[in-house]
Amino acid sequence: MTASTQEMVTPLDLGEGSLDLGQKEELKAFPPISDTIAWFKDVDWAEVREKCRGGVNNIGLVLAVIGEKLHDAGTWLAEV
Image 1 (cartoon, rainbow, N blue to C red):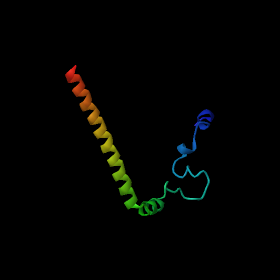
Image 2 (cartoon, rainbow, N blue to C red):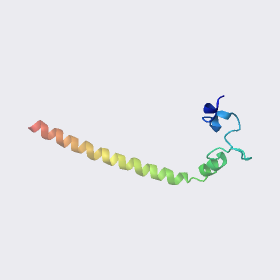
Image 3 (cartoon, helix red, strand yellow):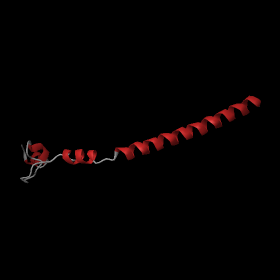
Image 4 (cartoon, rainbow, N blue to C red):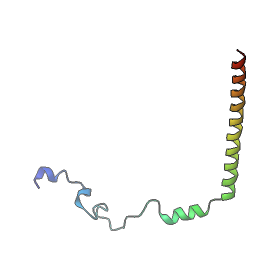
């Protein structure tokens, strides 16, 4: 390597172990799997189910109103 190409070498170009940049700690996964599993187990699934039911109910109401308005518009267009 010449001096000009040596200046452009990054730590990633140095190979295995170059990401720790002198630190002795091991790289950890993000997010840690154990934290993710603990969070997943702590979810109140009854509350999630109720919120989903409420959301589906709201979607049904919106679709019913849109359907009624489309029917009214179709009836009006048929009379014109």
